[in-house]
Length: 331
Image (cartoon, rainbow, N blue to C red; front, side):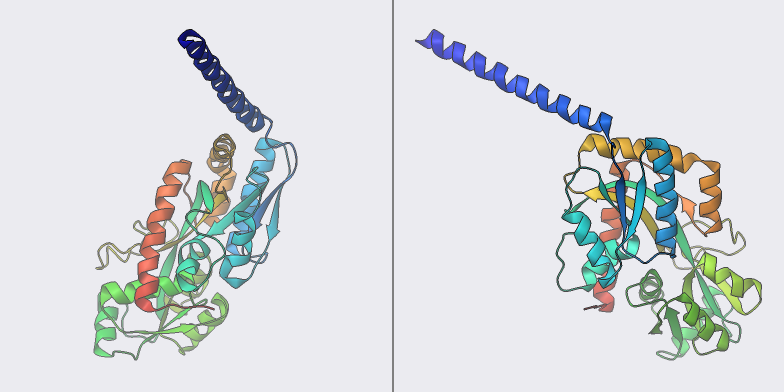
């Protein structure tokens, strides 16, 4: 009897081992054949912005590397919630991906009272593609023409100086709130519906300063209509090498960038994630891709899916604290 039981146990172990091997083989075969049809890359903004344009560069590169169409689909609205919810609920087969930015992934979740997805648990990070520092610029009439004098001026006039942004909860808004906190100044936020109207008011003297992406901040600087104070990244930008970082200029530890990355639904196959990551390594190493990204005021990042996961989680916690401290709420 005991011999028969032992034999049965051996048979069961062999059966489950075969099932495991079969499952692993099935996953490997799926990844090997992926993709065998068009892939949708969902973008949480309308066509034409920096997130959309970068996503289209990524889609083009992946199409060339993996020999299937990667199609950008714009699903704007609700601070990115519509696009993110769509991908979170999509089949985790690798045919619906998300190309998103720092704001919708790390700020929106802390700013809305209800979300239909969990920003950490609903997605699998694939690749951090690029990052862009912001440039702190001031009205030419403002007396503070370096960071130390600007902080001194702000402290002497609490609640009098204003800073513009391209919307509540935007990267520019969060950079301003981080600046207020670390510099211990009380400046007033003035949100706009985009960068262009904010820049117009900055040059016209209606607001005193603003944080803006380099690609739109540099034209008024080069024309002499605005003055650059510092960049918000931890390292200087090659586009404005003579402009110090905010950390260099006196606020230690300041680092605020907008960034872009590719993600999939949480349960996407690990082999598919690796295949996409490997293909993107080739795309990101292309000199033409790098040149285009640099022209948009960004730098290529890259790294492994695990590194992107760690970075994303740290950014989520960092900006969550800033959003909570500043009381940012959107409905």
